[in-house]
Length: 193
Image 1 (tube, rainbow, N blue to C red):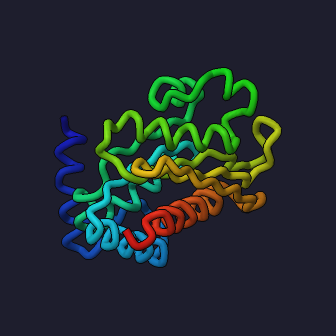
Image 2 (image 1 turned 90 degrees about the vertical axis):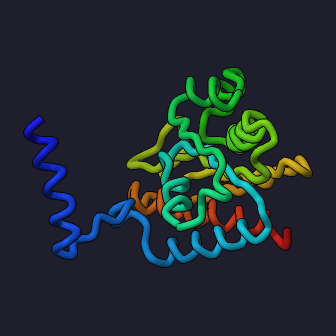
């Protein structure tokens, strides 16, 4: 109880003293935030709702989008599915697919995006899904920096995939690059909607 009272006094004092409690701390740079602001404005103008199905980014795409004022009008549903079990139960990724291709694969990224659209019962028009290896080192025989991104569109059934190989540049750099590319892919999928 004492710690809770101390925390409730520290945060307001820090803000009053000019400290920044920006989220996510130092992970998302200003250029990426501007990219998110532009995307949210375009989504709002088009009245298109989006969702995210994230693995290696652990919710950073959703956090970046929802850091923008007005995001609640267009960000509908976001899930983090880090484990195989979560991918299966929340997004309907078949275990056989995970066993055959591994979690870091084009097929799994596509299925994650479609799974979120199906689970959203028509409330989401665009979904971006990401799965990959942030590093350090390889995982499932996939190199560090390998990422699969997929964007699915409910109205057309189209799923666009992109594989990125960022290299072994560190977890934070891989995750940030993935956020940027995911936002760009959502923007491209939105087109002139």
